[in-house]
Image (tube, rainbow, N blue to C red; front, side, top):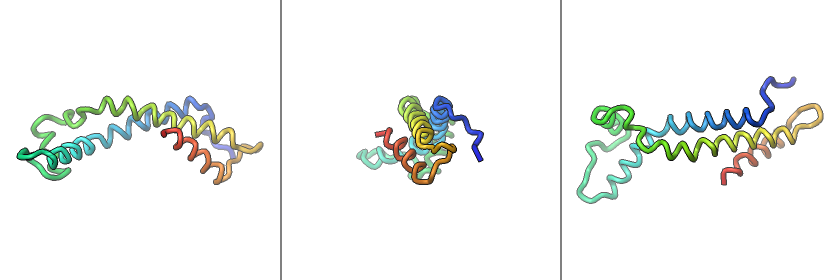
Amino acid sequence: KMSNKSKNPLSALAAGCLAGAVEATAVWPMEYIKTQLQLQSKAKGVALPYNGMIQGLTYTVRTTGFFSLYRGLAPTLVGSVPKAGIRFGLNSVIKESLRDKDGKLTAGKNFVAGLGGGGSQG
């Protein structure tokens, strides 16, 4: 049975871009706090008023507001959005080129398409 998924590689590219943006935005607050904690461990005589992820998240929201957790996200989005889009788009193109005449794709060929998409990230 054929799937109703779009075979247009631009749809896969757009979906990948959206997925990359959502993923980066979802994990960014934890990355931000992790970086603060790492910098604290390298600084001499300067200690953050928190020493863990939950404490860091609550302290940051309480003192500088919720959106301050997203400081520095823009450069990450500039890199991760196109990277995810290209990975998804290329995976889609490779999968379509590997389908047999009945439109079927074996697990091995699906694996190869995944390797090609993932390998495009460098």
